[in-house]
Image (cartoon, rainbow, N blue to C red):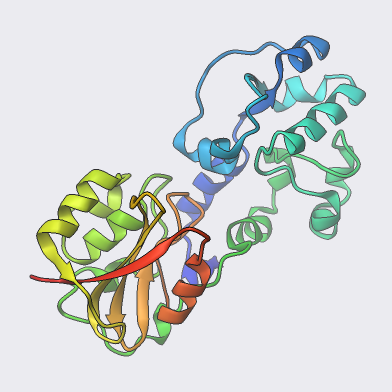
Length: 279
């Protein structure tokens, strides 16, 4: 299966199904909603993949309670409760509560059995025999393809860039900082959630200010108004860059043009600085 110009193995696709539609998934509610709908809640935290699937980091602050439901438990809730629960996920900014209109041509009539006539949540029953049809659309939404097949010359100064380009990580966590460091030869950096501090240490020890967009090894660093690094990418020459848009399992390590990366990363309050590899 090809997604965003990248071959996806059956094993990885199976993981994607689990991460998009886990057997037990979180529904975020207020204390009053939990009581009104007779939902059992607990403070169990999501996995990294669930955090990214449901975009837990952007939840409404009023959704202080979590009901963890499997499909059979969800299905036996009274239909008005299911409908209200689904609509509440939209109001609370939980991710992956798509519209029926968006998916009816692929999934109808299966999604018609869902609680709300306008919205639904993913369960494995909706993906049976449809995973190869649905997942590419879920993953590629709002993300441009990797253009690694268009690169004609790979730089020897970035020892792992060709290996990394056009790949998905094995789960959530690996991010832009680790991708840049791994491309430059830091062992294992592409496998972990690289936080700001070690990335800043690496920048200080392995790069110097300024760099050119058309040569390999220029590290783009985007900082917020407080000077904290928010995103990073690295040039590979010929007008191309390697970057990973986020730590989510849905975002690949991809090749895009410098202009495309700059355009997609433009954010109010961020400033761009360039540094070049010194080694």
